[in-house]
Length: 243
Image 1 (spheres, rainbow, N blue to C red):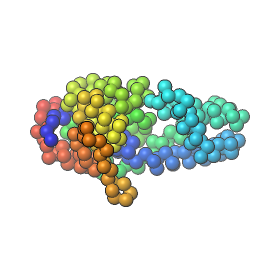
Image 2 (cartoon, rainbow, N blue to C red):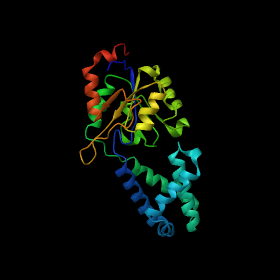
Image 3 (cartoon, rainbow, N blue to C red):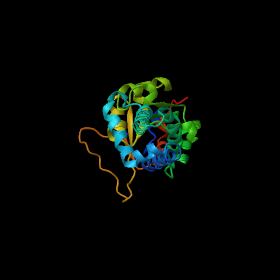
Image 4 (cartoon, rainbow, N blue to C red):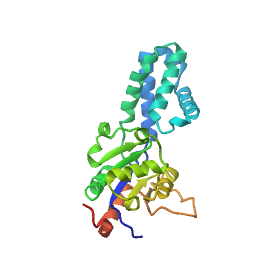
C-alpha cells in the first residue's frame, strides 16, 4: 500500500507501554498512601470498592469522559467525605497515585523505535489518558503531547485528531495515526481523514487479535513499533517532501 506520510500521531497506553500493570501498581500505591495518611478512608474503601467507585463516577459524569484526572479526584473526594476525613486530602492522594501512574515500563521495542521514527518524521502524542511524558522522560522525541483532558474531547472524536494535525501543520491525509485501539485509534483516525496504523501486539498466549470488520481496514497493521519503524525505513519514498 502506498500513501504519503509527513507526520505521525501516536497513542500511548497499550501502544508505547502496557497500561494494566501501571494502573495496578498506581492503585496499590494509592492504597498504601491512604493507610498511612487516612486510615479510616483506607478501611472503608479497599481496592475493589475503590475500583467500583471509579467506574460509578465515570458513569455518573459522562461529560468528563475525556478527563480521567477529574474523575479520579471526584472519587477521592467522595471517599474522604464518606469516611469522615478531610476532603482536602484528595489532592495529595492523587499526587501519590499520579506519580506511580507515570512510572511506566515500556514495551521492549518502544524506545529504540521511537528514536528511529523521530529521526525521520515529526511525532505527536495523542492520548485519551493522562500520562505526563515529561515525567516519564519521553517528551524529547515528541513535538508535543495533546491529551483529551487538555483538548476537551476524547478520541475517537474527530476534533482531537484535527487539532493535532493543525499543530503539526500537516493535512490529515498525510498524517499517520498509530495506536492499539480499534475504535479509538483506527476507526477514529479513519473517520477524521487520517491514515491509520493498527499496533496489533501478540497477547501473553502469543496470539494476535483478528481484525473484526469487513467494511474497512487499517492502512497498516504491524505487531510492534519496531515493525512500524522498519516499514518507514523500507519506504523512504513515503516520506518525500518532509522538511
